[in-house]
Image (cartoon, rainbow, N blue to C red; front, side):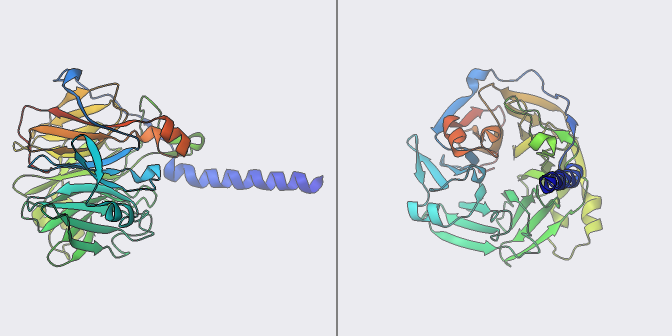
Length: 377
């Protein structure tokens, strides 16, 4: 019996040691203040575009009205993961074979002004190789592909949201790095086929010590040892290609940085850091979009809706609904609507397949704002 007691004590000691290691790095946090205002639009303005049996990832809307989305990789999808919405149905894009077998963990996607659909695959947090794929929307063929080196798409990275410069020459990517705790902005030069990281360790890309209190679930796990506190997530470039706007999910600020300091691989990190500007206070957020007047549209993960920040940093709630479990990716379509996915993160993250199926369906929404957006953003 002595050996049983000693084994039990050893196990308790191991658990305590693991807890002491995990909590300072992944746990802790405080509730975030509610920055919501009275919604500008009534809930009736929120339209359902598609109900689907699997959780949505991100969405991309084209200028000519085409809508694309990914199935969220956290849900462990086993079939096609990239779809186009056609006549109210989800159709694998560009076909069943490519959508099912090309990707490991596809999530972020966007459409550029050259009519290309870009899809980023974080490669199982970098361990399977993060990659970029571009499709020609006119033909559905793959016209560009790139696999990131390990010093860019590093182990435990999470290359997630992305945005493309108006001329199509540069792609700006948010590395959330939830597990690696090394978030950064990644720049990819399309013509040169070269990528590099900037703003590592800069306060603007790091998570702050906030706990996400979603109505379905407070986003802590394993008795509070781990809290969902991602770094830089939403990212979007303005119409002139002059600034990249970005925000960490669990950070109180929205920031921007001039693209002029991002497009040189050997630029000193201090130069980039000094060019960062804080735009204003934001909610705990996920996706970003932008309009032609440089208003930023921000999905609010705690309050089921979308907020808008003007260039002076003033924040207002556009729309919110108890129907929305987790407002995620957002994109402006040529039809004047903003499309956003409800990825229902609390009902898929670390959940069983039976729970995910029971929590279905999942929804893609849209609403029409009062300012024109940038097509494909």
